[in-house]
Image (cartoon, one colour):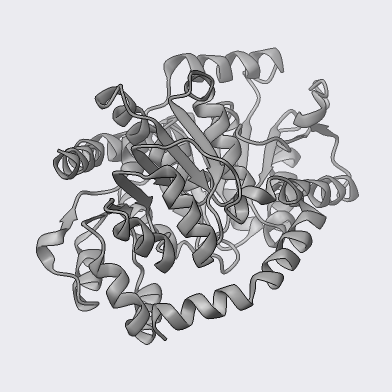
Length: 425
């Protein structure tokens, strides 16, 4: 399939994209909103830089880079796009002041329909397009390149599985990759995969992962500590189940039941990955007999509260900051896992299930340092949590090990910023 055939197919499938949004909106009403942005019919101001990050994880990783670009180019307007409501919420929270000042413009990235993307790029007229991690769309790259923009893949990831899919569609993928001015990948293995797809090695830079450059403001950490004191849980065990999926709820419940059996004052903070899962999580916790407070309802946490349901957007880092230990979801099910560096950056002992293929290198570094423990079930998680509750020194060692891994692997931000500045000179 080449890009022309791909474009015809995407255009013909446009009615199905409407159906997709309607189906997603049944669980998350945010998908009913801002359809003009999805189809490229929103009026936009020109921007020198377009930065796209699909969802919340990629957006969090991109925030320090975006702030550096705002500082380096004070006369530029940046347009930040996401694909998910979670990513959008993160942008709106992180750059509220800059949006109000007009320095940042935020919309959803249109679907990769040729007419929509062409109009979108024509309005923005960017000099530089930065795509975070893996969001490579043929028409987005084609029309950006055609408009004279330099297109950069930043913090690039390419798993073996994704590389195999690209090889199967090489007539579509190869021209798209040739239009990238630079690719900043996280590891040498990913660089090799791009080279095998035909990218010249001089256009590839191994820069490490921006996720290691996560800096959490001291005031933000202090606010989390104060929140825990307000709950009167500063001396009770508190652990966080972050970015969990419905297939993992039962395991989290089993783990917490084991913890409560020995520490009745313990608190689990359960944060589902997607907002459409909030109601199901609440029902599941109630059915298990827990005394639950809901963050969205500002329910008071008392000495009897056993679970806080984090059913709000953009607060996961703040809630991690309230805990001593954390399980990172998407890893007990076959999903690929979510970012374990977020709790590690807060000095927490971290746990994941065995299915964390999207964070293999990061997970291995944390495991080797004895920050990350891999568990295979709710019972195993509960026993591991109990072991570190009973041994605060061991828990502290695990937390310190995570902080050390981040410190040793920082630097991707400076490398990628230097690469972008060189291209935009």
